[in-house]
Each structure stands twice: as C-alpha cells, then as structure tokens.
Length: 190
Image (cartoon, rainbow, N blue to C red; front, side):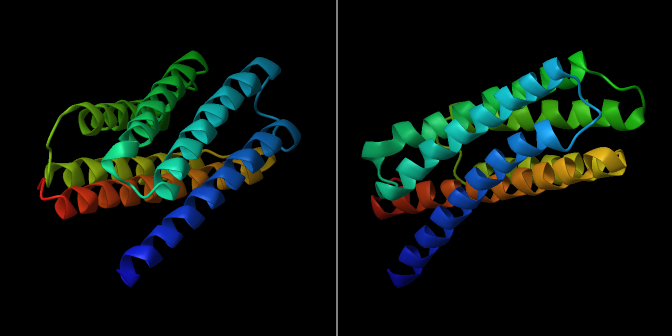
C-alpha cells in the first residue's frame, strides 16, 4: 500500500508540474516568440487552456482516490486530451509550414488522436491500453523531436518548455491508466 501512496504522490506532483509548465508555455508564447502572429498565439493559448483543464480534471481524479465513483474525472481528462490533440492538429493544418517535418508532425498528431479516442471509448482494453499508451508516448516523442528540429532561435524557450510539457502530460496519462487498472484489479474487474 505504501508503494501505491508513493505513486499517487508522484502522479500528483507530475500533474502540478504539468500545470505550471502549461502556464509558463502560455506566458512564453506571448513574450518569447517571434514566429507567431497574434491570432496564432491566441489559438495556441486555447490549446494550453484545454490542457490545463484536463490536468485539473485528472488532479481531482487522483485526489479522490482513482475509484470508480470518480471515473468521470478520468474520462474528462482523456476527452479533453482528445480535444486538445484535434485542436492542435487543426492549428497545424491552419498554420501549415511546408516541409517533410510538418507533414510527419500532422500524421503523428492524427495517430495520437486516434489512439486517445481508442483508449477513451473502447471498453475493457486491458493490456491493449498499454499498447495504445506506448503509441501515444511514441507520437509525443516524435512530435517533440520534430518541434525541436525546426525551432528558430527566437522561439527556443517556448518550444523547449512546450516539449517538456508534452512529455510530462504523457507521463500523467500513463500513470492515470495504471491507477485506473490498479483500481479495477482491486475490485476484481480485471
């Protein structure tokens, strides 16, 4: 049980860290970037607001003990992650920058969104949830690499913080899946 409590504490710390990074990303988007116009900055701000709301939802899920009675917050977290991924996909199409890296980034975002949809709406995935999580994590890692490859010197602070945020949120997502399946196992549902 002590391990379970420690993991919950790690999860909560990651959530708080991701929330802080989301706010820092918004600030940097407005003060440390030259490659985005005002409209584009506002659109990306919406992405980070959705991300922050998702993190608040999973924070409540963790604080309430990951049980079936609070699965609404788990589902809300995943649904908002789907919305955020689709929003980012639309933004990347809208503000498309030519090149192979941009095309690969769009494909990776689409794969991530599809994996999030599958993990959220397909019932009783059991071990398949982990396969989908690794697809999501792989998509995030590829997205971060592509983002950092194409970064300009004026946008480096924003891109680095945004990349770290993306990877921390992936960790939060993985721990949420683990805790959900741990709760199901305790209740004899797996």
